[in-house]
Structures are given as structure tokens and as C-alpha cells.
Length: 117
Image 1 (cartoon, rainbow, N blue to C red):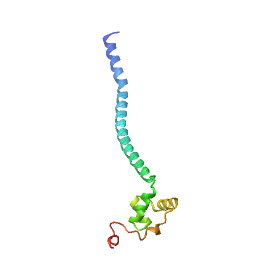
Image 2 (image 1 turned 180 degrees about the horizontal axis):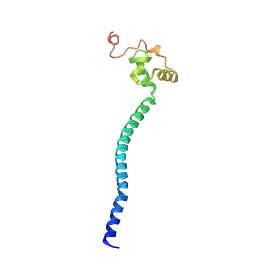
Image 3 (image 1 turned 90 degrees about the vertical axis):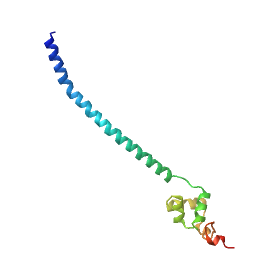
Image 4 (image 1 turned 30 degrees about the vertical axis):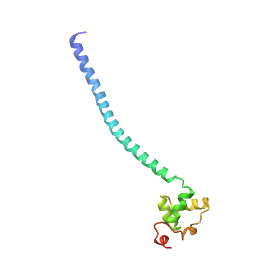
């Protein structure tokens, strides 16, 4: 093989590999974009899992009674205090046999009526 043949062969190889190099550059750019999207998605997934964990949190009887006492039997305000939905709190009330009406006149420490003799 002559030197001229080697030069032609190198030129042909360079010409043949140029599209491949461009494809690899495009793929590298896509990978960067996907990596960024994956990071964002990963963050979103962690946020959603946190919300699910909070939404599926189970409250015990003492926590519910404390919220009812502070809120004087008001189920809606007690649900807000527990960071749960009012309907879910009502299900807990049934489960634990609690009646909000029994907490309407419960004195609490921050209530002015509770400090009167």
C-alpha cells in the first residue's frame, strides 16, 4: 500500500466517522438533559412520598383526645390541628369510640375559663 492510498484511507475513515462523532455529541447532550430531568423527577418523587407518608399517618387515641380537648370538641379544627381530613378524623372517632360532644366543656390550660376558680 502506498502513502497516497493511506491518505485516501484516512480521509475516507474521517468522513465515515464524522456522522458517528456528531451522533455521539447529540447523545451526550441528551444524556445531560435527561440527567437534569431525572434529578427533578427524583425530587418530585420524594415530595410525593412525604405527602403519602403524612396522609397515611395513623393517630392514636391520646393524640385525638388532646386535639379534641384543645379545640373543645370541634372536629374540623381538631382535624386541622392533626393535619388530617375531617372525614378521616370522624373515622378515627368511630374506631376509638370517641364522642366530640364530651369535649365541648373541657377546660384547657390556655383557656381563661380554665384558670377561674
